[in-house]
Image (cartoon, rainbow, N blue to C red; front, side, top):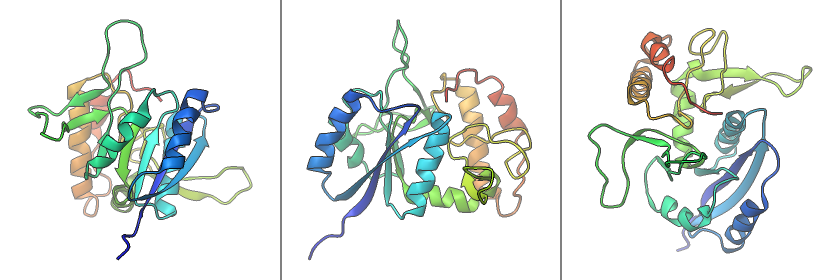
Length: 236
């Protein structure tokens, strides 16, 4: 009996074009494939990387993909580690890397307090950079359905009809219909500085908001807002 292939979207958010290094890594992947998956690729450019990430996530959800892998075009040697990323049967898993700067390496993740590395190499975290990220699309669907305060309307051109979008990756969506007028509601913290207090506050809020959405859609975000004031280095 033939096993049905899972639909996998490998996508890259762009500010400009993709580098030759990225393309050289992508071509063998398209040629050789990933066992058990029907692979599709997508490139989306936007005014910010997180805008493009949100559009990618929306596309993956609407087009019926099973899994999404987002890969930043400036990562090196990601093709070596993609099989390992795909080997973990968890809802969300990321490959960690350093911030691009001179000097001592600054790893872009924050371990969960008390967490230890598992035998399979995984470590539970409260924040992680999103440049090499695998997500089961059902997670995106559940967030879209059960946390309506992160929805917003957008249109490509002034005369186009507005469509509903979702702020999975913090990009500064503000106004009526978002989590709080004038304040974006982050779900994935991009390039966090390691401020464990802020990241923990965000995680605690998101956990509570998920549980309380049906009973209290306008959950109090004051603790999150205060913590985010101290989170000084989230890059987009």
